[in-house]
Length: 382
Image 1: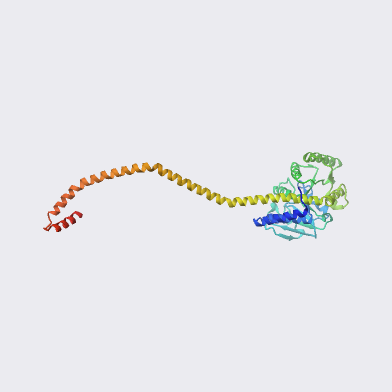
Image 2: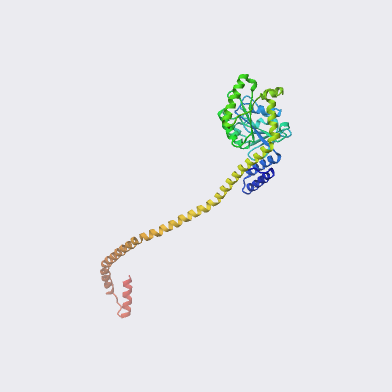
């Protein structure tokens, strides 16, 4: 079920408010970014495919400017967004703050050579170009090629999948399409409908090779997507940059992209908003559940400790009850033993004490009764 553009804008406001309350700044920022895309009517056409298919060169040819770095080795390591505006560029790092950079410095942040494995911690890159094809809200996303030795590059492309609104899939001839490319296309097909297939570097192939490559790709793509593939555009992005002649299927490709802007842009934006709202709502719900569990955990742990103490006290009382008769029997044994020892002691010491007392009494010189008793008492105490 889809809502109006205005309702989605309001919904992203609500997401931002809730995320702000529970301290999820990244989610606040993402909701704001998507909300701005909805307001401005921007949708992302991601250029996807195996490394060295000529994706960056293709985008350069489509915007008619050599902006994105190109070369003979895998270059793109960070998804780069190309959108409409005056010539400029900016990057965002871990602190989520945008920093303006010179267009000539773009390779310092997006290329594998200058930023291997994204050691500079770049999270996003945006390039602004006043190209007519971008003026209606279409934004190209130049993604790292999949299948290269740089695993982080493939991961970066897969991470960008939720943000794709339409796919510009660049295939080749050797091989026309790989298993990993098919896997990526199948993943995208679960939530987007618009695929544009381009067989690039057509100038390097014979007519026979073009037919073989195109038909092979058409067959495996139809099987993967479950429907016939009508168009696979044969182009040479490098040739177009050099002579600007619109050879091969170049003009047809441009017409298809312009058709997206003219006929499908509103639908693409609404579909994007619906997908993003579902995704962010799930993230928000998960974060709230985690925070509730974190708050409840100390209470649960205290209750468990209290229950453990109560159980220990109960066990102690039971143990005392069980051991009571044993304690009483032991006490009786100790009392009997003490009484025996007392009698033995008295039997041994009493005769000696009487003899000693009588001997001392015989030496008393006092003759008066009370005085004698007092002196006898003193002797007994000694």
